[in-house]
Amino acid sequence: MRRWILLAVLTAAATYLLELLDVDAAALFAGLVMAGALAILGFAPRRRQSAARPNSTDHTATADHPDTTDPGATTEPTEPADDAPAIPRPAMLAAQGVLGVFIGTMADPETLSGLGSAWFPVLVIGLGTLAMSVIGGALLGLHRLVDPLTGSLALVAGGASGLVALTRELGGDERMVAVIQYLRVALVTITIPLVASVVFDAHATGMAEAPPSLTQQGTGLILLAVCLGIGIPLGRLIHLPAAGLLGPMALATIAELTGIAGDAAVSTVLLTIAYAIIGWQAGLGFTMARLRAIGRVLPAALVLIIAIGVGCALLGVLLSVWTGESMFDCYLATTPGGIYAVLAAATAAGGNVAFVVAAQILRVLLMLFVAPFAARAAARRFSR
Image (cartoon, rainbow, N blue to C red):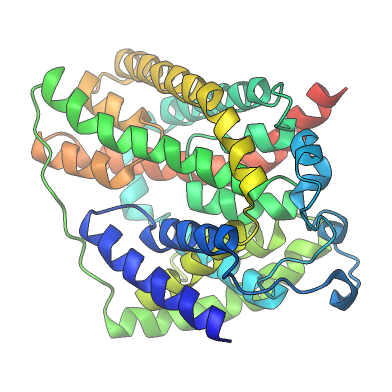
């Protein structure tokens, strides 16, 4: 218990510091780093032994540990590959469900209406971004320390927190995915202000988003209960990959688009806890051997991240020609991540904020709904 308290306190402190820097999903990144550091130092909460793991008919029962599909797993002979995850499965499912509902409530009809008649070009460009991400990830999967599934998920351009949450369920290496995804987010967040000021002569300013009211959070609790209670069992029934995340997210998206959700909003406290749990799940699996393996993969990952970023910028040019929107707005609309930096830049430049926000939300939803299927298909093809 003392180790859990230590992990929670360190995560809370790191989350506070990262939020001061406006880091996206600060609690997830803080949980990942703190749990990983404690795991490497030997002070992390102990893993549950595999003998205590209940049997399950869920397909994830045979893929609870990502190293079973990782060609680089042979470099870690001391890692207990058969151990169950340190986070109890009900807690992990709840965290995934909270995140799924939060993402689903982003599909506000009024926001998405900002696309107007440009919805089809934005959808096509989003699919192009997904294709680039999966191809880049499959190329990363050619590295001897990365399997094709992990590579595909690691380079999907959008929804970093959701992808980290569902990687273990799909049988990938969530540690590799977490590090590469947040490297992508960091690079995108840093480059947006630079490109905005140097290329487009726009200067981003910080944006403070008002927290949801108590009424909105109360309605959000009802929405959470319904989406988790129905979405997870339904997702398992129809064999939805990562049902803990995608099941509630699908129901929340439908409820938001149809107006059933009303002004429901996920509690900031619950979302922060969910982010921390997802970060812990990935971080507690770190070992020095695994850290060294990830370090050897990062140069290749960095090159592919930059290539995907350049490809997205070119798609932005195509989107501008197709829709008639300004080149700057389309650059922001197709940027692969860093949504808060995107909104700050769009607001500071006086751009079409509604268009940019709607395009970014559509991209995130598209990535999280389609990427698991695309990554699996790419992994099977490249494995053959």
